[in-house]
Image (cartoon, rainbow, N blue to C red; front, side, top):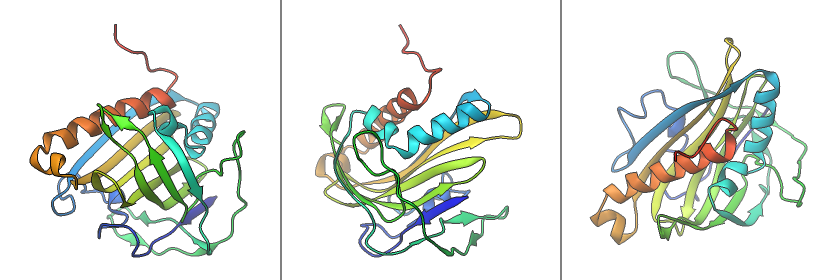
Length: 216
């Protein structure tokens, strides 16, 4: 099992880790718009491991048309990721040390505490900004991470990406997020926040799932 997380006051929102709350869709952080989608992307151990490796090497974000302009590993120790028990209570983290991995172009895999700058557009609008890896999880049947906004983004909030290999042998990809409008355009037209999120979710699925096909 490998876990990592990072929490400090440099993110620009208060509800750090709230993408893992069981009641996110019913009780999102104040002034934010929640979103959640889950897709079956195959079955079996090989599918789980290949999807997990792709996810932790930033494939979902790159496949969404976003560019990683800067990836900076955490400067200090990492800690166990935010987890919840069956009743939704947070489980206390513990310190760990992990070996850093790199993809073929030398970019570090996702790790707790990393800061990343993204550049790109969604629906013709700016979709970049600086983000922090709030937590990273690599377990026998669960892999994923969450990103929180640090600044220079059109929204403030968090999104999590999780791949689960269920006892039924099915592999599922789940993305959860909450976005509070920051830019003037998004504050005046909050429906654009939902449109942006729908487009991002579709792009993430295309990047991770071999089963996805674009409708004719």
